[in-house]
Amino acid sequence: MVKWIGPASAFALVALLTADARTSLCEDPPTSPLSLITLSATVMDEKCHIHGSQHPEDMDNPGAVKTFSLYDTDDEGGVIDRMAEVGGGRDLHVVHDRLMRHVEALPVDYCKLTDEHVDALGYLMGQYQKYRDDLLRLRADAKRFRVGLMEQVADTGLLPDGFADLEAEITYMRIRELRPEKVMELSPNCGWSTHYLLSALRDNGAGELHSYDLVDCSLKVLNAVSPDLVEGRWHFHQGDAFQSHLTKDTADSFDYFFIDSEHTFEFATRIIDTLFRTRRRDLPLRGGVHDSYNNNDKPSSEFQAFLEFFAGQSGERRMFTASPYKSMPFYATIMRIREELGVSSGGAEDNVAPCKWTVCANGMVFFDLYR
Image 1 (cartoon, rainbow, N blue to C red):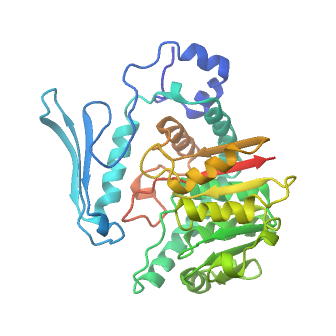
Image 2 (cartoon, rainbow, N blue to C red):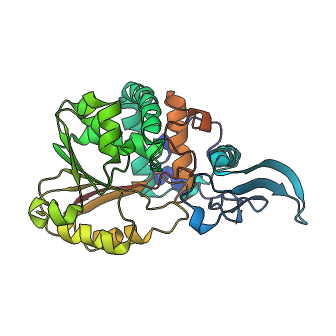
Image 3 (cartoon, one colour):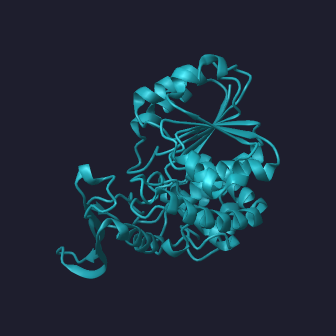
C-alpha cells in the first residue's frame, strides 16, 4: 500500500489521488508526517532542525550577516550530522537548497492533500505537459533577462523581487491558457514579474499589460534589456495608482489581476473596495496575490483581507498556492512533475529567479472566482 511520495512517478501518484483512492490509501497514514518548514528554530521530523538569525532591520540588506545551520540531533540533543552552516546573505539560497534536498528525501505525507489540492495538481500537470517546450524557451530567455536586470540595478540599491520560479511559471501558464486581453500588475518593482507577464502575452499573440508603481525601475530595465517585449503591449503608469489611474470605473476593464504591492490589510481592502466589489458580477475574478504564505501556514495580513472577501461571495471559486509553507506535499508533487518533464531539477544551481538574498517561498495564491 502506497502511503507517501517516494521515488515513484508524480504523474502516477496524481492519477491515484482520486477521492475514493485516497480514502483507501490513507487508512494507515505515515507515523512521522513532515512538519512545517520555517527558518526559525523549527523541528522538521522531530530530529532535523534549521536555525537562523537575522536582525529585523537588516531584512532588506543583502550584505547583512545571516547565519543558518541545518543539522540532525540525537535523543539527548547532541549534533550527529551537520549538513550546512553558512554566514552572509549571499549564501542563504545554498542553505535553502540543501534544506529542500534533505526535506524531499523524507517521507511526504500526501494523505494531507485535500480534494482542492488534487484538483489543482491535475490542472497543473496538464498545463506543464502542454506548455513544457514554451517553458524551456522562457527559462532560457529569463536567464538572459536576469543578467541584464542585475546590470541595470547594480548601482541603484534596489533589489529584484522574490518572484520565484514555480509561481512565475504558473503565472505564465495561466496567462497563456486564460488569454486575457488586459492584465493589471500592481508594483512591478524592477520588472522580473513583468517579464513573465509580457512573455505570456507575446506568446499568445494578443493582450496588453498595464503596470502601476511608485518607482520606474521596471521601465528602465525593460526598455534597456527587452525593448522588443515592451513594444505595443506594455503600458507603465508611475504614481499612486488609486489616485490617478485605478477607479471604480476601471474595475470591469481588466481580465487578470497580478497583485504584489503594499502587503497590508488596509491596502488589500482598498484594492477590494475599488476593483473587486464594484466589478460586474457576470465577469470572473482571476489573478494572483503575491507573498501570501511566505513564512508559515497562516495567511499574510494582506491575503487575510482577500480571504474574507472571497468567503462572502457566492458562486464557484478555486484558490491554490505552491508555497511549501502552506502544503509541503503539494509543493513536492509539483516539483517532481517539473523534474520528470525536464523543466527544472529544482536545485539552486537550476534556479532562474534572482533570489540570492531571500528564500523564494513561492507564496503567491492564485484565485479564480465566478460569482
